[in-house]
Image 1 (cartoon, rainbow, N blue to C red):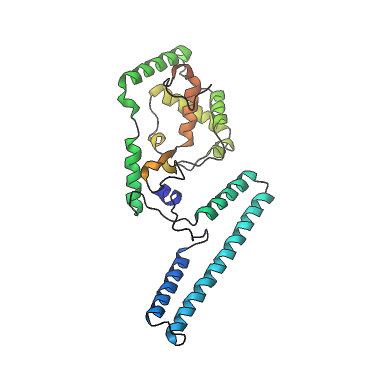
Image 2: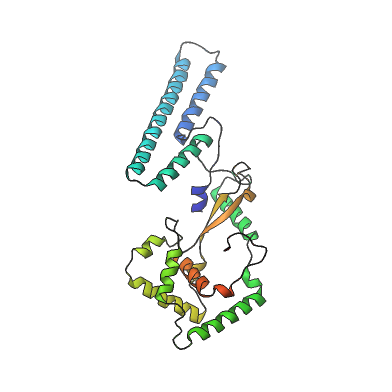
Length: 280
């Protein structure tokens, strides 16, 4: 639900501005209603009805002018701060987001397949992403074959102590994780692991070895936040089929996956029809 609210946007009209707010929209509607009432009364140039029209009009224009100035000042402050801190990555992201806002207008909750309620939109994405997923456990024969090979490799490597993973294995897997990535449901990122006490690597090694021996992982490893990402910005952004899901997983689960991949890479193969995300 949180991902729906923070990631989806709508382009209301070409006249929308990046600083547009619900308050400005209300002032605009008030000005329009006052103008319509003034026109219906014969467009009088004097009297209380004309004063109401002018007051609503001036209030609306003043609010737009102040909002535009405030937006520009805040933007300049944020860009200047990033530049002075020499944070070029954040500076470029902020600049890119600003150009996108100026091009497409302000952000608000959008319609997906004609739905406007956040709960209905979340349910629609849930159904769409569920239909495109494949349960690997359904291919039982391949799954059993892989488990047999992994167990045989584990027994041959170190059957006496069951130390499948070592501290260097954990450190190598940690170096493969990318920095600056969003956290999963546990709100833990790679930087937390790097800046923690070195004893954490030892505890992770013990935990990963226990999981490998018993063949079970925590339920939290299977929980993630699916964020909808637009496939084609030039296409229909209100169509659920124009979105792909990006899952924000637990950083500990990703660390364990890298350990498993490095340890059993020769036993894990992909389909010959897959060309992306493969080593050349």
